[in-house]
Structures are given as C-alpha cells and as structure tokens.
Amino acid sequence: MRLPVWIFLFIFSIILPLNAKMVSTQKDGALYIKSITVAELEHLYNQQEFFEFSKPRGVYPRIYLEHLPDDWKEVPENQAKQRTFIKILLPLVLKINEEILAERSEIEKINEKFSAGEKLSETELKFLEEKAEKYDIFTRLKGDHRTSYLLRYLLINVDAVPPSIMISTAAIYTDWGISRLALEANSLYRDEIWYQKDQGLKPIDDPDADYSYQIFSSLEDCIRHRALKLNSHINYDYLRESRRVARTMKRPPYGPQVAAQMIDDSNLKNIAGLIDYTFTFFQLSNADFYPKLRDVK
Image (cartoon, rainbow, N blue to C red; front, top):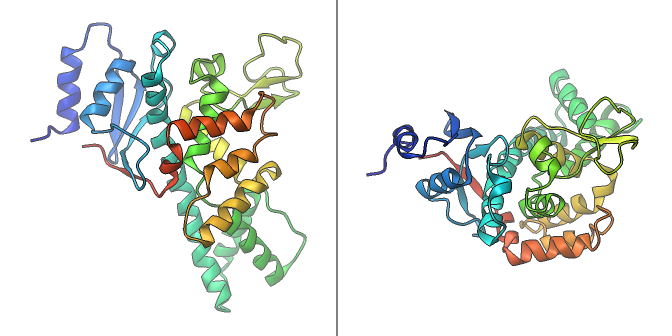
C-alpha cells in the first residue's frame, strides 16, 4: 500500500540529516517545493515513480520547484544531474502549457461561434482584445474583419510550446543550471532588461552595460515569460508556423526542425547544433508527444 504524500513527507523529515532543508506545500494535487536538496529531490521522485521523461504520452507528477535545489552547484556534473535538471523543468513547462491550452480552448469556442455566424457578446470581444494585446497581435481593422483577423492569429499564437525546446535551451543557456543567472535570478533564458540600470542582475563582466538580466521570483515565472515570448515575438514566427502545420497533421512540432531555425536565437556559438544534440541525446522530442501531468500520490 502506497503511503499518502503527507505521511511520506512527515517520515522523510524525521529520517533526513539535520541539515536537510526541504520546505514544501501541497495544493490541488500538486507539491510546491520552496527549498530542497538534490538527494531529497531524487528520493521524492522515486517515491512518486518519476523515473524517466522521454516516453511518448508520458504522465508526470505535479512537482513544482520554486528554484533549483539548494546544493545544486555543489553536486558534481554528470549525466544523472542533467537528467534531474530535465525532471525539474518538465512539470513546470507542462503546467504553463496547461494554462496556455485553457486560453486556447476559450478562443476555439469563440471562433466556432463566430464561424457559425453568431453574434459575439461584449465579454467575448473584450476577451479577444485582451488576448490580442497579450500575444502582440495588432490590426487597424474594425468590426467583423477585425474579429476574424484576431481569431486567425490567436489560434496560431496561443498554443502549447514544445517542452523539448524549452528544456534544451534552458540547459544550454545556464550550463545545466549552474550559471549565476539560474542560481541568483531564476533566469533560464538570459532575458535582458535594457536602459533600466536600477533593475535586474548586473553583468559581472560589463558593469557599465546599458542592460541587466531580468530577475524572476520563481522558475515557473521564468518559464511562463519565455513561453509568452515564443508565442508572441516576431523572432519566433518560424516556430509558430511549424507548430501550426504540425497541428493540422495532428502531431507536435518536430524538434530538430525547430532547432535548425534557432541559429539567430543566441550569440552562443553553434546554438542550433547544441539544442539539436541535447534533445537528441536525451530523447527530449518524445516529451513533446502529448505528455500530461498527474496529481502527486
């Protein structure tokens, strides 16, 4: 018989060394972890049967870390640590995708109603305008022409982001989570703030720079910010088009194809090749094939 998670956590807190720091709360079937060591985390993953991440249609527990484990930088670099990094990020990416797909579902309902010739309510029109602003969709059209335009591009922009791309880029940009940005700012994608010197994390190698790095309150906030950027910024039109075509064929975007288009995404040398190698080595493309989250046991 499997113990409820609250009993497991109670026992775990007793048997762990005195310097253990696991701090967590459980809500709506999810475990939110504020502080934990790598050893504690691996024990928890084993308890929750979270052993792998590259199975098509995989189902993963709702374990959400606020930041990387407290002793992350001290743990030796090896493939096991890299696999743990992937397991930390995957549930967070899937959580954000759930939010995006909930938005998309509402847009699809409105689109179905509009396509049937029914008049949209003021609430529905306001919802479309709010989402158009959020996802950076602009037009000077008015009336039904405007509504048609917004629906068309919202259905392109508002969609799940590929976990393989989100995770592999985070791994490369942060050197598997040991970068200063990842550890001090929960920043996984080197998001910059320009001409606001009183904000963000200052570059160590260029103290007079006109930019700083954005600080996020949690890994979840960072991933949500990145997902919105992929779904709205003009630089990622190719990703959204690849995703749109893939959806018509009822499959996720093909990761290697997207990676090949990311050559200008960063000034890191051979960024596309590094992304391609990372998700090929860890079979991350399989994580794009309709994964789901389940409640913690």
